[in-house]
Length: 400
Image (cartoon, rainbow, N blue to C red; front, side, top):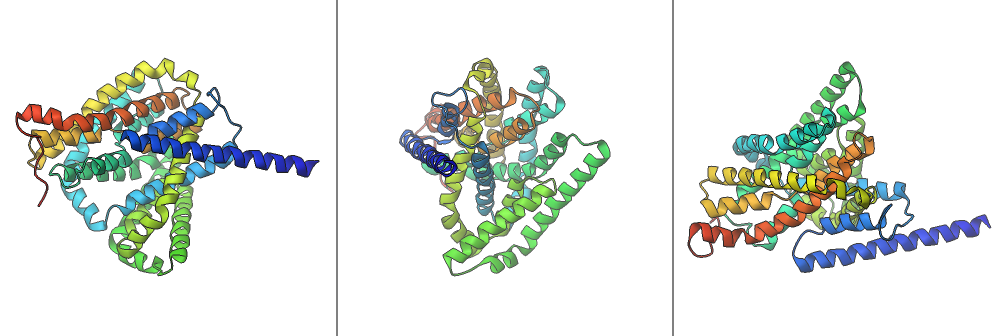
């Protein structure tokens, strides 16, 4: 009887997981057809399948949670692969001023909003992170879909993204210490260790990335896949033990890899990244009761309106510093307005620690609004730019 019951439970679990994956495929198709990021649809899917949803499923949250954790790690690892050490160093030299303005303009509204709502300073720091960072995944997709990779404003956009990712490498350890609730002495030691770990890892990535790439390289796809994935998970786990986010550890591994290893890793791990990343967004949605969204929807819309405008100003100023004309500045700002994966990661940390119940629903509604709204703004930026410039299509010439 016990064996039969176990077999029946396993069959039901497999059937439910299969249903979820097929559902994700349908949502991804719908997003591709509509021309925007699938992230909002994944979140909505999680909301529909979780408690209080339309069709709640009895999925194992532990099982889905592990998949979600792997999704975050792979997202950040693949993002790190997009940058070489030279590009990173160049971005740091030229983009620190724009990055500082970005932090001031977009982190501050989240903090002030949380404090005005009566939330704790720790929650305010979390909400500041949610409103601060643009979605690299959504931004990259929009740039590719609209054929803007060669535009004059795009280097300013990419520089902002790189600086934000590095800021997260220092921000997430601070959040981990704050959420742990340790004393000042223990907290300071943990924070110092976390920051030192990030600095050492950055030095290794910048100075010895070539050596690391040679060690991991193999002509066998199977060996390279297992070696790379194992290294990413191992470093992520060790980083977590040292009070550094596993996602940041994975980002630094991606940053250290270059050449043929990075190219093959993108191809081999891309499908796994897509699967587990989708699982992460669904898992976040599963933890939110849809009934909790209406009370925070107006606040999320107001926050999205304010921080959408401040992010547009960020892109405008960064592109202007490169000598880009007004149409390109507008395109840079609108494409940066999207929030997505990192905002959900930060809110997820707060939800898991239980600092503020409304943070999860607020962040979900906020990301839904901007992950859908920003790509739409980016699409109409060219007609708006043409109207502003009073000529042609309003596009700047691509970089030669």
